[in-house]
Amino acid sequence: MSRRAVVLVIDSLGVGALPDAHLYGDQHSHTLDNTARAVGGIRVENLARLGLGNIEGVESIRPAESPIASFGRMMPLSPAKDTTAGHWELMGVVVERPFATFPEGFPEELMKRFKEETGYDYLWAKPASGTEIIKLLGREHLRTGKLIVYTSADSVFQIAAHEELIPPEELYRICRKARRLLNEYNVGRVIARPFITKNGRFVRTERRKDFSIPPPEQTLLELLSRAGVDVVGVGKVDDIFAHRGFTRTIRAHTSREILTVLSEALADSEGGFFLATLGEFDTLYGHRNDPQGYARTLEEVDHLLPSVMEKLSREDMFIITADHGCDPTTPSTDHSREYVPLMVYGRGLREGVNLGTRATLADVARTVAEYFGVEGIRRGESFLKELLKEKTMHVHRIDDPTAEV
Image 1 (cartoon, rainbow, N blue to C red):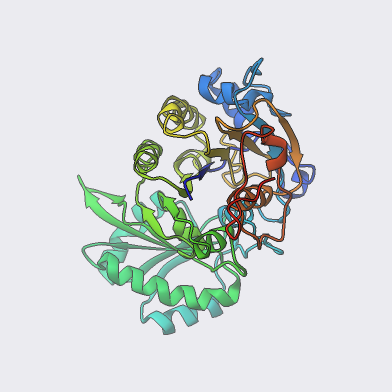
Image 2 (cartoon, one colour; image 1 turned 90 degrees about the horizontal axis):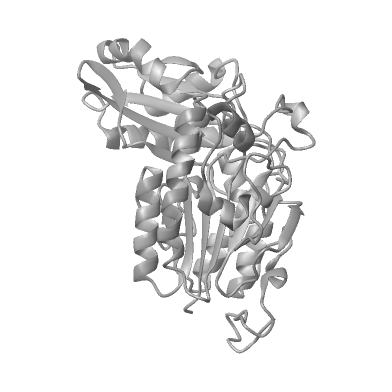
């Protein structure tokens, strides 16, 4: 099949507090608008042309008179507000209960089992900043050989180790053992955090690796790949799905790298589904309360978007969205309970359709599934029919390539 669909997730780009945000302490959150106010405005001409400023609740971006994409916003059906839950829901699987978090630190019983399972002792086992904890405990880690274990406001069990003491492959082995244990505790991710000594300082390396709890049911990724569609993960997004459903992954780290390799992959492919996540918005700027970095990188992404869009053919669909919020201007460094943007572009699709407020992020999965003609997504409502130009684009069924909607 020659058609392609691309979903680009700008990790944490929330567009306003949800009706239940007060239950999470997030009633004043608006990642996009608050960031723009904090830095005196954000210049995102391409995102504005796509309709970002036309989305309900967005005030910091001037609405386009004639948006070249359709636009709306989505609210999660899941009660969670983390990366795993948001990505799973975008791909059609709704988390029924939030993943476990440990604001007071990991329980003693869990850490006792961790020592028994891995054979390693540990330091800390409480919430901490990843960069600060290796400064604080790096030397003791090297002296004692104990792993640095910490968490955050997210459902994560993070293990830091110096590469000269514990090579990354050994750290990954430890994390796999921890992953099996932590499935019982409903922890979303185990994260390996290797670090080194550079210029007398401890710094984290790009050998981070995530070990996610597997989705409880089939995602859009698995349905597409089993139907013969090439499913390509760009960046590290495959980690979020325990590597299930992807036919291949293209590794990249920064937003610039991810958009560059995505553009190159589109230039070399004739069909398939592409899922790319720009994670540095969340990890480097949202969680660290850095609105300047957030705004600067959003402007950089906006500048690079045309290099991706120009690779799209008439049969392609390009969706830009997010998984949750992470307002860098509020006192909290946690994710924020927000609507996420929805922009859908395609040369063969209608422009300027207001898709309104969607009841679940799973509408993306339902729409892409219909676009490729596969079934199996149980949640969400497709918006594909609202976008099709009459008699100009067909929806091919896998089992009947002549069928149309």
